[in-house]
Length: 142
Image (cartoon, rainbow, N blue to C red; front, side, top):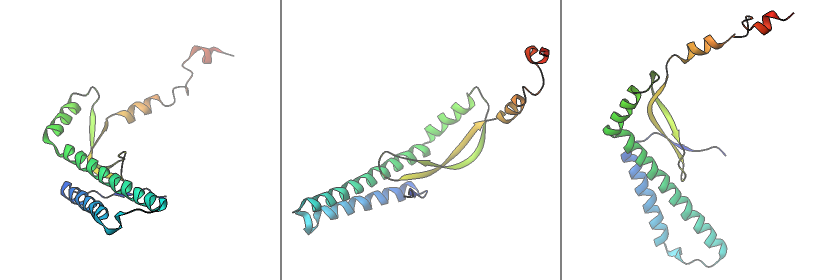
């Protein structure tokens, strides 16, 4: 089963989707079919309610994450953290990041991506350490 991921939306679009799902849940509860007569009906209604509430919870988490990412104070503290890092960090630009909440579908947000600069050079220096006989045990054995 392919995993669904919602496309990148604005906070307002996410909040509108939450309201729509919530109204759908209320319409289901207010419908004429409110009386459940068999165990199968109860089970199907229960699964439907669980699916809708999980979707609402996932969208609420998405809205909270997006609000947090847009917060200027959080962005400033992130920049301070990057500047105070022991390693030099290089900005690779905005990248889509997939987040998997406990409830609901996964979603994507775009955020700055940083990596430690200069790692490629360090790896190149470490390669081939045993290619020359640097150890006396290897060079001196006959």
